[in-house]
Length: 169
Image 1 (cartoon, rainbow, N blue to C red):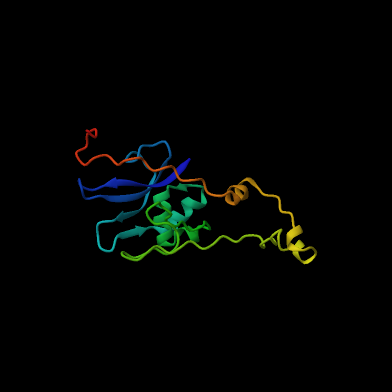
Image 2 (image 1 turned 30 degrees about the vertical axis):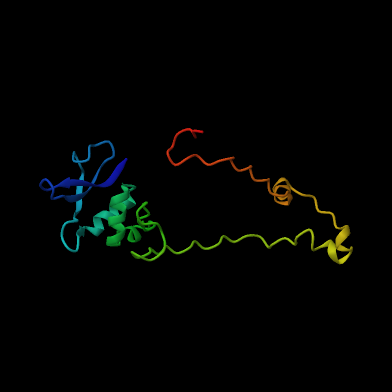
């Protein structure tokens, strides 16, 4: 299977990458079939050059881009030209949605849509019968709430002396 991926070139601590078409079994910096672009993340802004016609042709032939290459090809507009869905970054550092700025609290998540609220059991029969005759079955959670709170334990006879040892008489 063919992959469109990055190969690292450049000096130590100065990475630069080629965008290449290679066999999926070839090593990262090993043999490749064609160079279709290059990417330099160190320039400001980052430099991205892609031979769009060649990239579209390889994608239409069935070459699968790596995750990083797909993001770069999306940035260059090649994925849409090849009829593929654009790829967005969805890493753990940047979740989808708005990011909170420093010092501001994170926005609260929107409440999930739920089914319409059910009418409480106590309200439905109340119109038909007096409140004293309404019988509601308690679930274990409701039974725990209905019980009176447990009695507090008895306080100790004497607090320990400030010296920290046994009291002497």
